[in-house]
Amino acid sequence: MHDEVLPAVGVLGTGVELREITHASTYVCRTRNNQPDAKISEHARGTAIDISGFGLDNHDPIPIVPRAGKGTIEEAFQRAVRAGACMHFTTVLGPGSDEYHDNHLHFD
Image 1 (cartoon, rainbow, N blue to C red):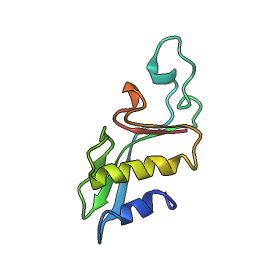
Image 2: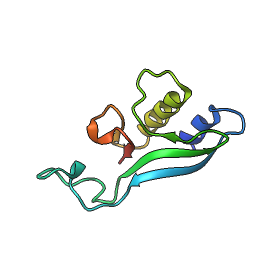
Image 3: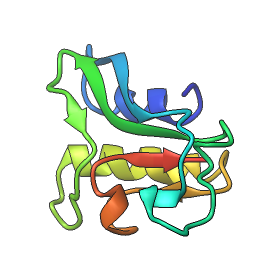
Image 4: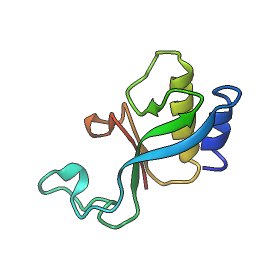
């Protein structure tokens, strides 16, 4: 948060501040992507979190959605958060990874 998300929020404009992080999932005892016969999910181990959006003061919320090639500041923010997460987590998935991660960022 401190090293990656907050600096990215700072680029969104004067007076824009992070108000909330919307999570989609944390601990859930299940297989990967809820698929039969799949390996156990990192969520079932309690080592993963899914983030579906960011609530901001003085800026519209930024949900995690496919944005490839849009060229918006929201796309840049989402890319910065995702890329920065790679410095801290072993696995980082999101829109474009697969159909299961088009509406959130997965960190484990």
